[in-house]
Length: 194
Image 1 (cartoon, rainbow, N blue to C red):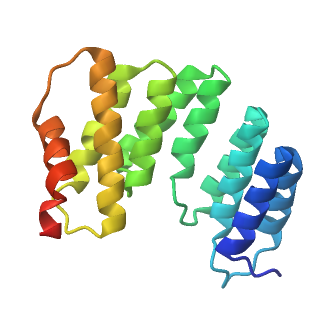
Image 2: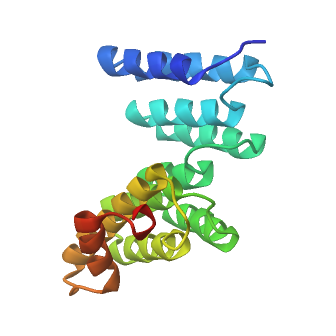
């Protein structure tokens, strides 16, 4: 069994960026996931997710979908919900109905974190579904904006507010309360920071 740390994954991903050899790194990540120690800093599911991301960078979307499915089946905690990532890979494969069915299942359960909402909003925007992207961004903001937040969560909320603002501009929508919230946060910080 192998103990895997965040640094190990960062080194592999940096190597992939430098070399452009995402396939080799994806294969290495799959090998790591299959041998990871139970007390590793990183979950097996997260390693499968990272492998899926490398497959996507290599334009191997079927393999990415399979890696994300392994993460889903594993059930471990991941930074971005593997179902959201899989939906994005399915959209790349033009499996639109399957991708949206996956997003609907995720919506019914309620994604547990902001990175998942950000990923879904940006993915749908990239695929031309501005209305869907707007809805996901709005739901994420509504869910997390009243929590006492760390600076990390505050930064993620700002990122989601900005993404939603860009989507609203693309939709030709006027300013609303969340846009004004973004403006206030940019000037004064999150209310909980004061």
